[in-house]
Each structure stands twice: as C-alpha cells, then as structure tokens.
Length: 486
Image (cartoon, rainbow, N blue to C red; front, side, top):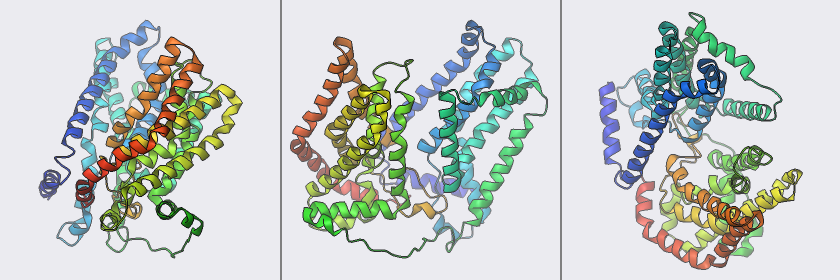
C-alpha cells in the first residue's frame, strides 16, 4: 500500500503543470541545501576546537545553548517547512485504510531536509568528541536524544500548524523567553543546561526524549485520524453570514470596489487574518536591533524596513494569490489590471503608514531611531511595494482560504520561493545605507535610502506600466497554476 502512495506522489509531482515552471527554483533550492549542508558540517567539525581556543568546555557549552538551537529550529520550521499534503478526499472513497493514509503522510516528514541536515552538525561534532577521548557509549546516547528532539520539533511543527491555540501559546512563550533573555531578566539555560548535560552523563536519561517523541507521534496520529472524515475535519465550516457595505469606498470608483473586496477578504478568512497578526509582530522587530551596540550599524535600516513593512512582506508577497480561488472569474470580467494593481498598492501603503505611526513608541530610543523607521517606510512605499507587486506575477502559489479547517491543509503564511524573492527588497537598502555610512555619515545614508523611495514614488506610473505588462504576459500561466489543487 505504501508503494502505491509513493507511486501516486511521484505521478502528481512530474505531471503538475507547475513542474517545469518551478524547475529553476528547485535547482536553486538544491544548491542552497548543499550550501547549508556544508556549513553544518564545517561547524560540526570546527566547534570543538573553536570552543577549546576560547577556554570553554565544548560539550557543556553546546549543551548550554541547545535550548535556543531547538527553539530557533522550530521557528524556522513554522515559517518555511511545508507540511506534506495528500489529496485525501479521493482516497477516502477507495479501499485505503485510514491509519495507512495517516502513517504515510506523517512518514513523509521523516526524510525532510529540515530533519537530516542537523545530523551534519551532530555527527561530525560527536566524532570529534570521541577522538578527543569522550566516552563512546555516552556520546551515542546523547546523539539518540538529539535525534529525538529534532523529530519532536518535526511533529510539533505539524501540530502547531493545525491547532491554533497551541500555536498562540508557543508564540507568546517564545517571545517572552527571548525578551527575558535579551534584557537579562531570566536565563532559561540555567535550568536546561544541566538536563542536556545529563543526557551525556546519566545513563538512561536519554530515553526521556525518546518516550516524548513516541507519545507525540501517537498524539499527532490520533489527531489526524480522528479528523479524517469527509463530514468532519475535511468539511467546510459554516458560519453565520454577515454583510458589510463599506459604502464610503464607493467614491473611489473601481479602486474602491477592489479595496472593499480586499478588506472583506482579510476580515473573513483565517489565513488572511494572520497577515494582520504578523504585521503587529513585525512592529516589535526593532527591539532586537535598536539599542544593541554589538551589531553592524547598517542593520538599523534593516530593522526600520521590517518594523514598517510587516504587512507588505506578509500580504504583498502573495498578490494575486489571495484571489486565486476566483481569479479565473475575475479574468472573464472587464477588469483593468491597472485598477487591480493600484488597489493592492494603496492597501499596502495605508497599512505601512499606519504601522509607522504606531511605531512611534520607538521614540523612547531617540529621534534618530524613529527617523530610521520613517525612512524605511518611505523606501517600502516607493520601492518595495513595487517589487512585491512585480514578484506577484511570478509567485504562482494558489492559496486556499478555507484550508485552515482541513486535515493536512496548508496554513503557511510563508514559503521558500516567496522568501527568496524577498531578498532583493532587503539587500538593496542595506547596500545604500552602507555606502552612505562608508563614504559620509548616517544622515547621508538615510538620505540615500529615502531618496530611492522618493524616486520610486515619482516614477510610479512608469513602473506600474511595466508591472501591468508583466501581469498580462503571465496571465494564462497564472490561471493554469491556480487550477492545480495539489
């Protein structure tokens, strides 16, 4: 039965309409995987000797910071790692046993890059420890515990993406621990370091994470098995319908119609509501950088862009994917692309402006810090808003707004392709700011970034003409990509 599932997965992969279009991106991701694999191997081999030169005990030092290693790994998984999806509904009417379907879906995650890449750090590090005289049996049990924690994160990622209350608890806990550690209010490593060290020193203690992993797998398996029904977990949740006229937007004509549609979409769908929540989270991003003297000065503009541009990065990168469920219908109407693009742009501009005003609490750090945020907002409005709209023509990722209630449904607000397309939006202002600092001072650096934003606003109509042309070129390939359901 598992062989049949593998056969179906392979056919779905090679027959997908987006296979050839995404081949270049897959090759690029392959090179990135190789790059990060080499980094993990290098760090695993060199960590022991680097820590020795710093007069630190290598294993104890690594054990001290393992809690942050695993928390960071889980955060990266939540943002980037895709949850394996099976086209479950057709399978439920066929003679496939439900436990087999669930086991296969969960088993697909075992071979994920986000799991085995950690072995490229722990195995070389353990080999060096053995060479340097550490007990072989204790090191093997310590590795068993590390592998268990990696797969605990794997199944926590699946659970947190499907049980929103647990996700909210984790997010609040992670932010609280990070803030307490940063401001030296509470050091969690005081309690976790002895436990991780005990995994090496105390025989049998390494079985605790193994039992936790087994229990977590059973819980995950039962959760999805209990929701694997057409009339339960896979059914569409019905709510009482409410109507909103938003008639005050009628004065803006076609633009107002598009804005009303976007506002309703954000308010009524769980997936789109996360954009507002993430925008609020981005507002506090600057707390990590502002006031921190142990970082390159250019990183301040990095923080300024993210503080004001949370909505731009989270919502904007998926234009027009938010409308993928009815995009074909839109294309049969007499809808001007320019009006559609302009409405998205104004929505991004309005939220960026509001975010900048809310971020005024950064005045606590001084006028220069808040000025950096304002300059970041100008750049976001003048340049990054155009880049996200242009990137939308190539990011043909359909979004199922009702998937939040579906078993094995994709509820990601991010994906790797979107993140890679976001890199130019970050590095260009960093380069301008660095050049200003290198050859002049901070005032000139801010002026360069703000100037780029102003130029983008001045040439807005010409840029929009190019974006509109690209959307028209990609129109039919976008429609074809949105037809793909798996």
